[in-house]
Image (spheres, rainbow, N blue to C red):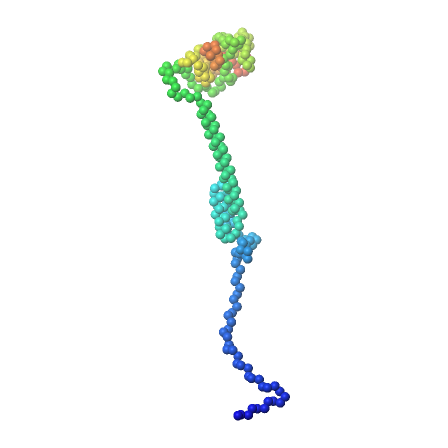
Length: 293
């Protein structure tokens, strides 16, 4: 048996040697850098407001769409919708584009409504006018008798001719007033209810220088103011030179006529046109027959 060394005096027994350390581990992985923040999202996931003064996709196009939508609705709506879609894809709000779509749609709807109202009113007016026209088709056989034509004449001369309107057919006391060649009279009253005949040697406004009869119509109805005036103007102009000695175009005087109206035509069988001569500057004294000017 081997000898044990004596324990050191006054001390603790010797300790065993520490075990060798664990083998060295692999070096640790280098630290990972933090992920960069998403430029388009915050923790809440909503759109990020652009920095002040920054443009975003569709901003300019949205403004253009809003302006165009005010004046050209359909085009403005299309432009604004495109701009709004671009902004949504990029994660931005586009107020002008949205306003363009809304404004354009409202104006387009208002225009369509106004157009519809005008169309309905126009159709209603057209139908009313059509219903008020008398129906004349296919109810009776047309007359085979040829109508008696009114005297033909060129359109009224528009030179320095009659300066006053023609006098209408006149009545007094329930009877038609009859004029005769050579009669002189004063200017009729405003309502043509009275005619003052005077001696031609006294001052007067008119002198009757010719008269003629217009043919009746086939059915006896009044031929109308236009046809009556055309016949009267032609006949009185033709008779003017025979009375004054000069054609009307070269004369200093005017002519008018007294023609039947629809009342005297139907009530008194008035078919006579009377031609009267006058001086535009005022009343005349004595007859103007063969005056030569």
